[in-house]
Every structure is written in structure tokens, then in C-alpha cells.
Amino acid sequence: MVHELYVNHPLTSQKIMEILDNNPELEKITCPPSVYQRIAPKYIEALSRLGIKVEPVKKRGRPKKYNARDREAVDEMIEKGCTPLDISNTLKIPLKTVYYFNKTPLKKGRKRKYSTETIKKVHNMHKNGLSARKISDNLKIPLRSVYGLLKRKE
Image 1 (tube, rainbow, N blue to C red):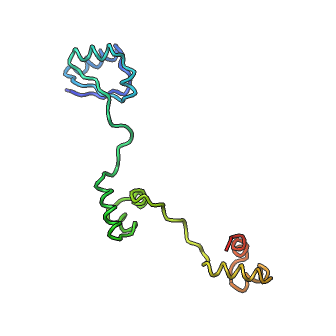
Image 2: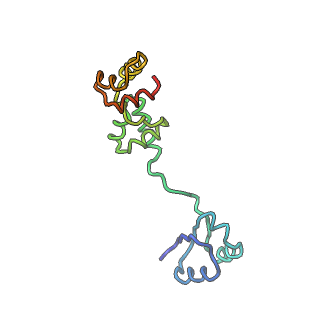
Image 3: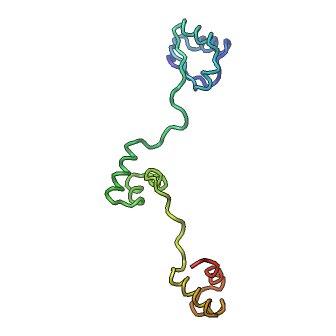
């Protein structure tokens, strides 16, 4: 038989009777705090006279997937100099979670295709009067990329 029951809707006299009929050995009813607030005090008092406690559940929200021990393990590995990817693979934790535990921003997106030297060359050649077509031919870079690089600041 059930000794503890979780209810996620307000208790009415009809609902209480139904619960008591189905669970004669009931000792405790738990519910979310929002539901507990909507239960009439006279119902709580009547149930307590019958020896049944009505209590709100303390835990709220989604349960945590990783505990404090996982966080500590990530911190220790970071102090030892491990990379986030190594930590992720070793502890079987997603990389994003490792960054979250470490409170560091995530890595930047994809790497630039052209180095800063190439970008400077494109800008210098353009300042010296070369057209985008000639820059494209000289550096063997697609014309569209040259225009994109020219839009960027040095």
C-alpha cells in the first residue's frame, strides 16, 4: 500500500475522499508549493486530525544532471592544465558543460580562412591602386573574397 502520495492539483473534499478510499494506509501527501497555497486550511487541519501530513515539496525545477563532485573534477583538471576537450572526453561531459562549469566564454566560431598577413596585403595592394580583380589574380584569392576582405577593418 502507498504511505506517501504526490499530488499536483489542489485538494478538494471530493478529491480527498477519493484519495482516502484508494489509499487507506496513507501517511503523507506532498505537493508543489503553488498547489499547497491553494489548499484550504480546513482540509489540511482535517487531514492532520486523521494522521495525514500535507507538505509542500522543497525541490523545484528540473533536477541537476551533474553534481558538485563533477564540478570539482572539472576545476581540478583545469588547474592541472588540461584542455576543455580533454576534460570533456575524460569525464564524459559535453564540451559546452565543461565551459559552463569553468565560467569561461565558449570558443569563438570557425577560424578565419585568410591570415591577418593576407588581409593586410589585400588592403595595402588596394591602397596602392590595384583593382580587386588584379589583387585576386596576384594572391590567387577568389574575387568575392577580396571584396569581403576589403570590407573588413585591418
